[in-house]
Every structure is written in structure tokens, then in C-alpha cells.
Image (cartoon, rainbow, N blue to C red; front, top):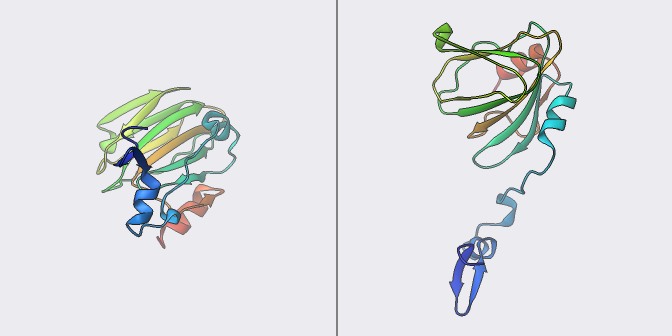
Length: 156
């Protein structure tokens, strides 16, 4: 248990107990996410579904229809990891200055402040999951279509 908390006499105090002693309630401590992310991504029918939101990161599954895209976007203060779980994607960075294609298992990291787009170049829905750091969407968000997502984002 060394390194997990602080030493109190002959024992180690858990990090959770130590935080509670400082007045930080356990409600502020996110529970771990567990699950088969590949299965959850491939079975997700929604354009965007937030699966987990922690204090410093967020896990989102996406399904992009054939020929569809997420739209050219930039997150000034958010890094993003994107992994392809089904289909073929074309990643476009910096307004076309860099292009990368990826299939199942391919991944990219988009640093904060980088313009990017993800385009489905396959005949089936593109299935990806993405990790935002820090969280980008409201906890529990489910957007069935890109149009629903764009409409909601105007008010975020």
C-alpha cells in the first residue's frame, strides 16, 4: 500500500480518507470507468455519446455515417485522442496542411488549438472513441445526429 496514501503511524491512510479529512467529499471523486470500449464503440448508433466524464478527462463514443464528418473544429484548451474501432477515417489537420488515413486500430492525438476534421471514407458507419482532456461536452450528452449536436453546441 505504500505510495497510495500518507503514512499514519504504522499504517497508510487511503487517499480517499485523506481527502475526506480535508473536507473534500467522495461525491467529487469520480468512479472508474470499466467496460469493453471496442464493443461499446462499435455498437454505438449515436453521432456522439458521452460514456464517462471525470474531473480531467472525458470518454466519448461516436458513429459517423458514410461520407459524413464531424466538421472542421478547434478546441483551444482541450487535447483529444481519437481511435478508430470500425471503418476508415481521413483525419485532416490545420485546414488541410496535414492528412492522415486510418482504419481499425488507427489513432491520432489532436493537441489543443489544432484545427481538425474526421471524415468517414468507408461505406459503413465510422466507429471511433475519443478522449478529451479536460472534458469538452456536458456529462451524459447523447446526440443522435450531427444536426442535433450542432444545434446543441450553439448553446454551450
